[in-house]
Length: 297
Ligand SMILES: Nc1ncnc2c1ncn2[C@@H]1O[C@H](COP(=O)(O)OP(=O)(O)OP(=O)(O)O)[C@@H](O)[C@H]1O
Ligand SMILES: [Mg+2]
Image (tube, protein in one colour):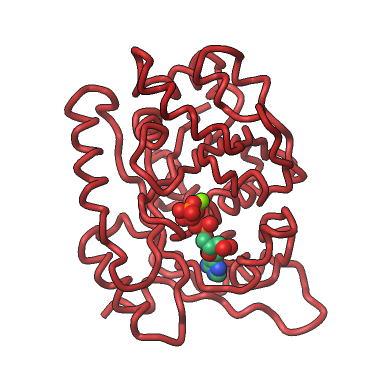
């Protein structure tokens, strides 16, 4: 199994990291992938967003301190094939503990390997807090690849140069020489504004083909789903947000298809292909969200 650890990072808050982690994870299970989502944010939004109760002591904290095996904290979710290591507020203390430990950068990587998690899961997704603290640094050191969600708004790229600098330093230091940004996901795209288009174009100028073709639209249902503890494909599988995250999962898997496979690595357009997979709806159908190819000059 060519399993991978994918860090979902952006030091900026509220850009759609957790929404992307939860919904990409859930949509990947529809392709029979087994997914472990590790919630590394003491805010525990991924935990509650998947309907798991926050409980004192139920997080990666003890494992980070070598006090218990991570396997003890894995929980099933209501989505078959999607497991989570939850978080809770005490995880914030891990930053301090990590700073005192000898292996303060490599602890998360160590946990993933000690517990053979890569043998159990196709993808391990790591949801980060909006900071560049030691937990996020551990994510950078443990990940094979990074997905960076960027919100379609002014100053979208603000702060990312700091992250790129850190990635370069981690690579150079030997802590994670192969770390790469796998993709940029543009979130909260508003079809009605020129601003969204301008931001996507600016990001494409910086990151080129790293930018996912799939744009995640601003969609009220995506904002509602976490309060029901459900991923979007369970909460409202027909809304534009669900269609977009299903498409993102498909694009993600295409990007991860080995080169010798007959499937194309990148598709430039997404005709109504994806609607065909959506079960018939009694009343009007979801509007297909746009893709980057529709807005490139
Ligand atoms: N495409 C979207 N359309 C509408 N609302 C969205 C969308 N994506 C995310 N949201 C909402 O925006 C808020 C921030 O999203 P999210 O929690 O995913 O960001 P985050 O980057 O994980 O935030 P933090 O940095 O605090 O961890 C949440 O209330 C979420 O429900
Ligand atoms: Mg979050």
